[in-house]
Length: 276
Image 1 (cartoon, helix red, strand yellow):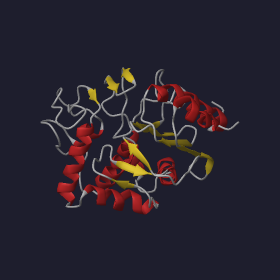
Image 2 (cartoon, helix red, strand yellow):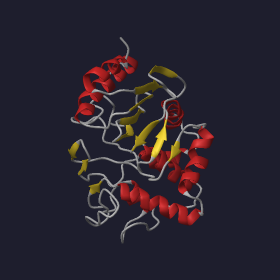
Image 3 (cartoon, helix red, strand yellow):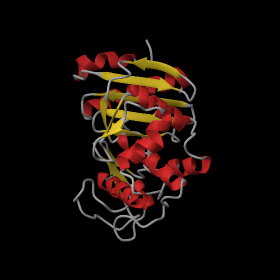
């Protein structure tokens, strides 16, 4: 038995045709499962890539986190942290004043990257490639449309990104700390498809709600963990306390099956490689 062995039952138990997964530290891959070079739709795991590119722009001083963006009173920081007041999808309207509630929003990400394009004069897909994909050697990953959910890529490519998240090179230490620090702490919110959390912790584009009962990764990842899941049945999380990252991509959309299958998988990863 290995940490990822339960994936072998997903095709029969959950009708998941194809799954690829990986566990790694900053320096090496510990375990893989499935075709590491198969291209999958990333859905909202795209936001991890997008926010990293935005933080490169912040580091380069092309934009500032407290630049006005989005609804009146909102900033890039609000948009990244899902506290701008925008609803979930484009056209959903404004649900409240900035900074008063955690409302998960694809629209917010699309607005912030449109602003980045306006400032830099570079289409965001190109900027993302130049800032993240090219320097990390992510040759099979690309963006089709939405900066919130339009990414496609492979586990092999995301492994390179996970190594960066475990030992950052593209971002300076202070910039990376900003990325993973909980923004607007104490705000409650609903994580789509999972449930309501109070608080629903979020950094600058990275979920920081790990280690809670009812979480999609189960209770085993430490509270310092960060990452994201996607509606395409995808996830990537990093547990810095244990120096481990886990990636899982498949071709069945997120649903009740995910909340049944993912927590024991993540628990097995932490138990196998960190003794949690």
